[in-house]
Length: 214
Length: 404
Image (tube, rainbow over all chains, first blue to last red; front, side, top):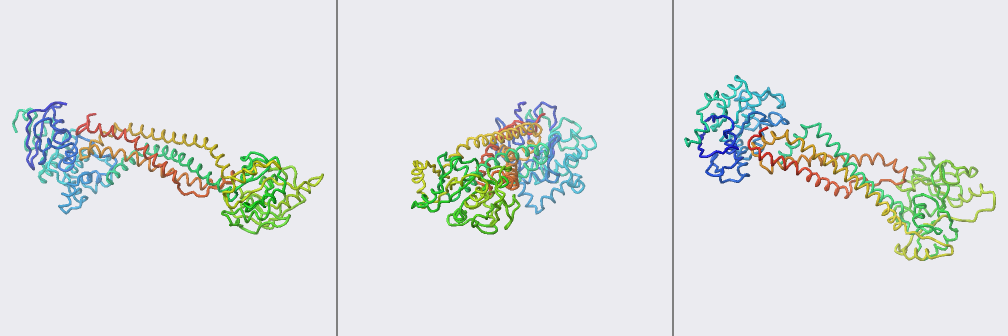
């Protein structure tokens, strides 16, 4: 696992940042740190207002469920659950997300359906189809909707477009960026692909971050 | 918790084929486990029920086990007869409530014939002072009537008023038929779930008359096979048995049926123990199969674990999820196994009764089954712990996303 040191990064609500860099530099390690799965050996790490460096593993797991949405490269969905159940998983796992959603007065199913349609998918069209019957592009959108449901303050995306063709990539990133900005969540997307730059508010590299620039 | 259980269930259902096979193996082993336990306890209960109100069995000198097996389970034969005069001698004893003579050795189409006295029906009911219930008719009177056990009547196809003849000796094909002494069916007993159901009961006089018809030489002296005694107080049995066993005029054996039965069952217990150990081994093998299945599925489930982890699932949650799968599988198998045992026993009970004369009376779940079920679940939890722990552990090492 690459060592990260002297790293400084600050994300603002509603901001979309692309972290660009070649593989093996430590991008995955940084994501694991931000998600609270790894803990920094020194220094401070505050995510969504919580001092992760001072929290135990269980508290970080809980904070991740409550405040962070994650989008993987692929295989985001549990193949044995229908689309809607996959979408509602964060609400089942985190009482904080459940409470935030309840405060809006929208039933979870309705909120999930609305999110999906902002991302250009219709729950009715997907119906009760099994996840395996969806295209990769559709799966990534469902994953994005799931990450956003219950209004977490940070979205982490790990090479979310690497399995998509350019046309699908374009549509996916536009939709994700819009949905994230509309909800005021910060988005950190990690990719080796420079072609993604235009979709983001700013682009940073690990080298630059480790140099000490914010 | 219930959301996690639903998740575990959905995951199991998605792997239908392996889950189904595993469930089959677990269910069959649970069926074996419960079946052995159930038969063990049921046969014991039925065997004791067959002894009923009899406190002491008295016969000419032989082994107590032989006396019990012959008189209660009509297995084997007694070689030395007892003079009928013993009935009056024992009936005179102050502790003897009833003394019922038994004369065995004849049969009707393979069903054992018991020669006795009408008091038999009054004394050997399901409880002291409760007579045997008749499905139809009444006890025999005189030497030309017969009473049939419920199963005997069914097998012979005889009804009240029908006639039948006795054969000398046991076995379905007997050489000598007491053909010239037909007996009329005076009564049919209600089912008791004991070997009595298969018996043909006649008066001693009827047996005597049948034998005289065949015997060509001197008239037989009046002999019986054994005496069934009921005592008051019942605790007098031990002292009376000791006293009778010392008797040399004639040489007697007095068997305490419950005690002798306990001894026999203890001896049979070794075989039962082997069966039980075997059935436990089969259960362990099935659980080992489940363990192998779960271990084999771990690699392909790393993604699933990573997704759950991203959603905030920690080590305890993943551990619970995988343990729940093992317990769900085993729990379902236990329920199915119990159902199979009880269902098939209910179906097999009539066949078992005609083969052994013992009826399985109470088919409700027993305490032993509860203990076995708990033991099986504990074993399943133990077996599930290894893959659960490995998977949860690895999910932590994988970080945010697994690198394949």
